[in-house]
Image 1 (cartoon, rainbow, N blue to C red):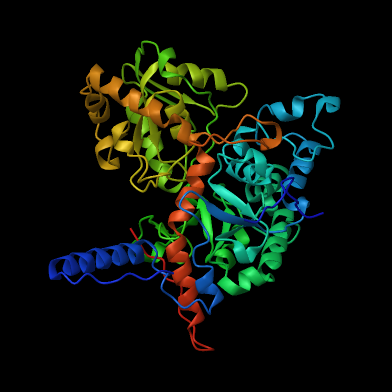
Image 2 (image 1 turned 180 degrees about the vertical axis):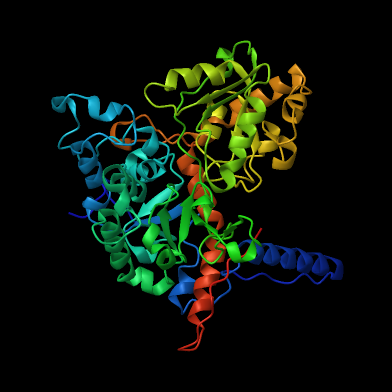
Length: 486
């Protein structure tokens, strides 16, 4: 059965005489010219012919919303995957799996909108759940939502593809990790194929080449097998780590990570926050912090995360520094809360990917992030200036013996307090959870979901231009994809 919203869709020249006084005429002309210039600057497609539908639909949105059509995927590809998760066994990758220690008679059953897992390996990527939950909320309750749902693709600015790509991938990894890179016997690949085949056969995709479609790919391995096919779309990602590939030919024998720019780019895609795993600490609850620097996580990582192991060896014996191995699961969560809330700074080195949910746990814990990740991309930049509450350190500097600890000690208490006050202001921006069962209900206007859509809204002029450029190509002409940017 396809997704259906509980909401009800609703639908919703004069002439001037010229002044004979030359100075007034000049002023009037100048004012008109300036007005038209500003109009075309902010509405670059407004002067185009109305005979073409692509021009008519260039901008549907008023300034305070983006018009979103939800692709009609079957429920088995979103909320049905949650049914599958809650009916499955424990996650073999976790020492303890709180989700599957719940008595069977208390597990979610026959719910239209089941809860998302608390399993930290999955929960950290739960943006897909909260974004869809907002769109599925009855329209009368969506007064604070920046995204306005429409029920015709022709009326939409973008088409949202409601596939729980992270949950699909994690279900496969938790049960049969060995089959993940293969196609045969891989349930996740079968679902990826089903999604792509569905959307590519719609008129909306054919009209735009997928450029106005939006996919949530927060897990670095989400939709692994079909990424080249959805590359034209707007991808919501936590960073570009999932697109890193080892290119030994260009490294002269040294490991070198490069991004495949034909698939991802800051020009078309949106960096979104991880879901934080630790609860928010209010500024009024902040207490004196004794520890200088805190880190909890895996010591051994791959690729760009090799810096973590080197940092660990440099810092583990430093005074006022705590380095703990582990993950904030059911057994380590309280330890992480205590560690972050009693430390002045929290270390955020690169791991398998340039960023992690640890950064957002630090922000919610008012622990000043120390970011040692040269290739990091961060969500909502342009809205958030991370340098106002974070310390950025080059990898080369961090790996100098005793350098990092000495550097952190130079920050006076007054500056640390200023960082925490600024962090407290931005805490709501990184909050997805709306506090309603199944994610169905009003969202906080200043929360993560609205800011994700505001960033997508900023891409609309580029999306429309790309669609128009593609339409004017003569038959048979192919231009290779180019998304290079810095």
